[in-house]
Image (cartoon, rainbow, N blue to C red; front, side):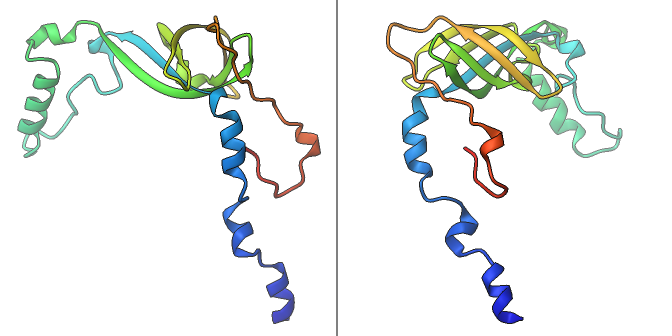
Length: 167
C-alpha cells in the first residue's frame, strides 16, 4: 500500500505549479494595468476610518487615537469633517486593443474618477462601461495612446482539465 500512496503524491515540481509562468507573464505584461481611482467622501459619514475609534473612557489608547486623528485631519478641528478625496489602486487586464479593460467591481466601486495606468507608466482617464456586482467584475473603456496595445484572451473553460493551472 505504501507503493500506491507514493504514486498518488504529486512530485515537488507539480506541487508548486508550472515552471513556465515567467514566459507567459513576459508575453502579457503589457496587457496588465493598474487602476487608479479617486472618490470624494464626507468625513462625517466616512465609515472607513474617518472617525475616531470608540474606546472605553478609561482606555490608555484614547490619548493616542485623539492625537493621531487630530493630526490626520490636519489639526483643523471641525473643518476636518470637510469632504476629502480618497485614492485607491487596483489592477486589471486589457481584453481588447480598442482600450477595453476588465477589473474587479470592488476596485472601481463608488469612484468619482477612474484612470488606467499602462505598464510604461502612461496614465489615461477611463470610463465605466458596465459592472456586475454579483461576480465582482467591471468593464472599463479608455482611448488608447498611439502605440499598439497588448490584450489578453479569455480561455475556454470547457477545455480545462481538473487540476490544470490557470493564469
